[in-house]
Length: 221
Image 1 (cartoon, helix red, strand yellow):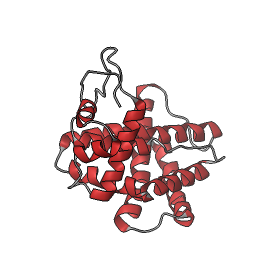
Image 2 (image 1 turned 180 degrees about the vertical axis):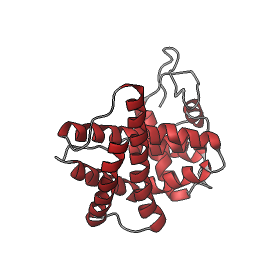
Image 3 (image 1 turned 90 degrees about the vertical axis):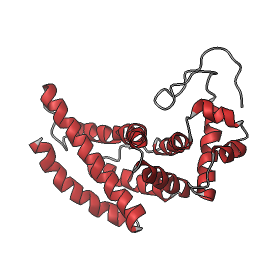
Image 4 (image 1 turned 180 degrees about the horizontal axis):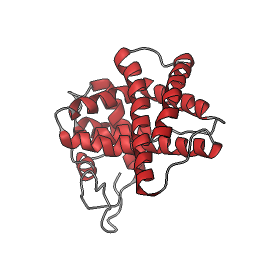
């Protein structure tokens, strides 16, 4: 799907820094859907930009105007899935954490998420630039859930407020980083490495353990 040449395109500067025609959200969505479908069917090794272009019914040049190569394309296909995660207010920090853990596990159980995530993580072990892009496109973006959950818990009085000034902000940032690492690491390991179920009972036990440590962390920091 081509857009009329109305002026410079504001491309994905963080990935390609290219300019050209305006982006089409519909074309992007079709391409990312096609990428995930092709990855599930073909696997990382056999996936090509040509396969994706054919499935999305766009020219291969359309892909290269948007993404520099397969790594960038697959990463974006993964990142938009994680943007689906939400943190609805369930009334308590415990219930909020259990809810997002189960939501995250359900996302990881989807074949397109599992295949794409494991592929880009594996590639990133030998590609420092890709590792940086994963951190920017997935990790940093999803820390929004931790920030939202902490602020909500602080308003309820379940967690102490952040300290003032630069030191308080730095301590809050350290807490957000650690909480994200603990939740994401535990769920990814159980779901994708151990292959064990992340069910309501496991989520409740995990949340109890996390909250026991979180109280001390927030007080100390």
